[in-house]
Image 1 (cartoon, rainbow, N blue to C red):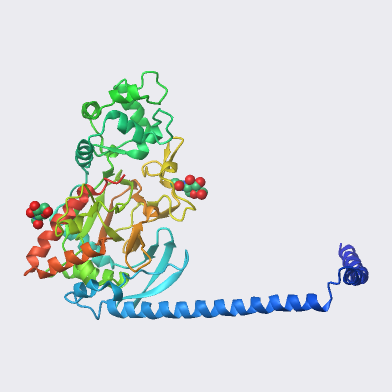
Image 2 (image 1 turned 120 degrees about the vertical axis):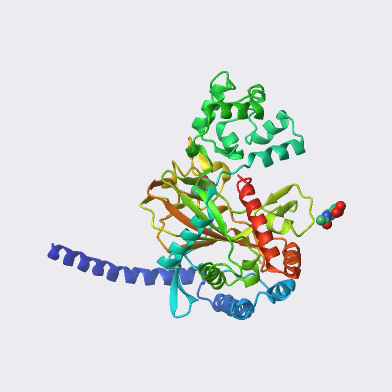
Length: 494
Ligand SMILES: *[C@@H]1O[C@H](CO)[C@@H](O)[C@H](O)[C@H]1NC(C)=O
Ligand SMILES: *[C@@H]1O[C@H](CO)[C@@H](O)[C@H](O)[C@H]1NC(C)=O
């Protein structure tokens, strides 16, 4: 074997040795023929070469100076928004001058990147990047065991309510307001314009009817119950679609009765105020969130209270966005109270979601991000061959990313992209997420949403107005009202 390979090696060396000579001869012949080695040719090549080098050097200088400027402005921002320097009275006025303010955004670098963050005195936390789309981080031991216990107890004392979402009413009012005929609705739903409605087309547009999560199976059942699909091919023609009026739909669902497992979310929740006078643990958590996100404390103070959610065995929350897309005619729930608008659309504007795991779940209950870091995103591709990626009861295993609940761990992500000018940009569609079904035990989580209006002027006016209010009880009232509005409008975007 060894002898063989030595022979091969020798042969190889021999071969290359033999090859050198003819190659030289070849080049000489080439030089003679095409005068490639002529003086003018050499000059031309050298000129190109020098121009190229000068270009590269210029580019390097450009990049260097640009990033130095960026670093400069970034360090200025951090100083401006360092929570230890900013007190909540100053921050709104700072936000007023957009020129010197940009909303901090943590860099993810790459998936798996770990950075140290200083959240509590005398202890460093490690923050790992879980995905770039959305920009998603995990921080183990964000809360101590005792803190988790306190939050669960406080929520228990306050009492948790069913988290059923009654979105349908909004939706129906909107349809009435727009005064669309069945033909118009049919045309809107018929994405591929084949004059038939596939189940996917119906589900992509609205997976939720009366708080019920529609699956292809439920839809088939409804078609059969209403005798809507006469020829039974699973497709609706315009005539068949007319039979499927929303009244009939609703009556059918009522007659059948609804199981909890069919709801959009099957959980109980409550809200805990974190402002002055609140339990120390709740205030501490808020302070840590401010340090983590590097946002001005005023923004965090004026956001929704802490939401605590409990899922029993069998509980779930189908995948959704915490925030809606923002169009010029959309108003944010949190600023709408302060800004006089009469826009037909309202949505939650939650720049950041911080999700805390208050216990380690015995089985299931992962947080699933179906399209995290997917190469592309297309709403229509979420349902294929009866597999709905948003269905966390059935298809969590097909999600791109799943986070296992671990007591004390926090994850946080941005629901919006940057607009490139230091403010909130478009909704990040990749931020889709849901709670997988709990197969064993109970799951406790808390959510801290940080509200920022993508319309900079509206956010500023809102902050001005609220900071002018004389006492804190008013602030408290405002945030509670807004949070309730939030919970009801949470799912309208699906
Ligand atoms: C909002 O604006 C409308 C018309 O512009 C006005 O009639 C109404 O009084 C305003 N409401 C508030 C609370 O300012
Ligand atoms: C995820 O990316 C793949 C590859 O680009 C694409 O085929 C698929 O449709 C994407 N999924 C969604 C839901 O857009």
